[in-house]
Amino acid sequence: MVNEQLPSTGADTGLKANGVHLVLPADSGEVILASTDTAIHNCGD
Image (cartoon, rainbow, N blue to C red; front, side):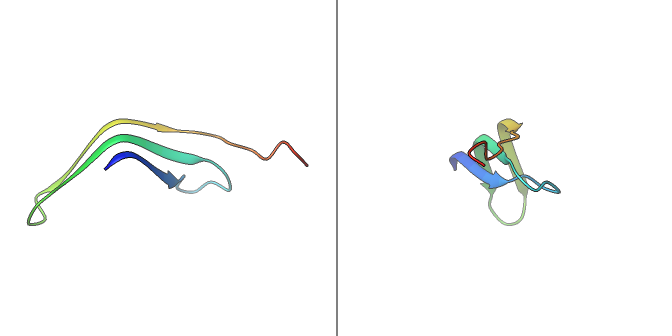
């Protein structure tokens, strides 16, 4: 996957963004390049 975006683990808001996420065949593992967590809040309240 390229530019994978997932909900942040254990947070009410925010995203985890992975630049590149490779899943290896036959349950050999995975490789994640350039990962970051964001804290996005709804400022329109």
